[in-house]
Structure formats: structure tokens, C-alpha cells
Image (cartoon, rainbow, N blue to C red; front, side):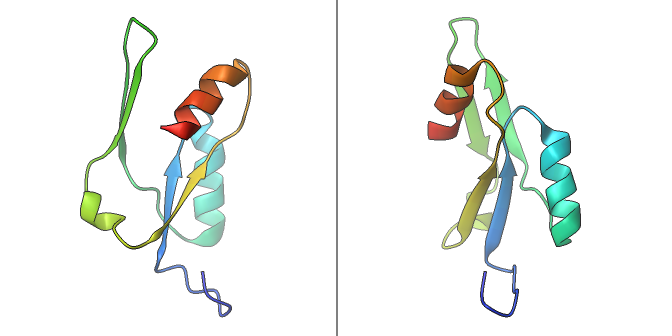
Length: 80
């Protein structure tokens, strides 16, 4: 974001939890969330994939997340 408040180079992504919190932030900023494919597997692995890679190339990406229990799972998700 530039000093004049330009959000054109900013990409917002929500974690799998508290998407309502992320949506309230994007509404306040008058911006949109990028869609992310989210899959949880039985062996505790997770997949998070941005469908349109070109929409984030060369831009600032911000993950909107809260760290509610279970904390280790939220931290793991934020790191992938």
C-alpha cells in the first residue's frame, strides 16, 4: 500500500478460520478476498492453494488470520 492509500497491489487472503473477521476487514478497506482452495486430509495434512497464481504475482499478499485454539494448527496453516 502506498502513502496515498492505494490498495491495487495488495492481495488479501483469509485463513480457514474466522473468514467473517477477514470479510469485515476487506469490507472496511473496500477490497476483496482472493479465493483459496482449502482441503484438510485425514492424516492432519492440509492444502491451501491460490487458484489464480497470476492474481498474486508481484503483489503484496496479506494473510488475515486469528490464532485461536488449536494454536499449533493455526501456526502450521500460516506457514504453508
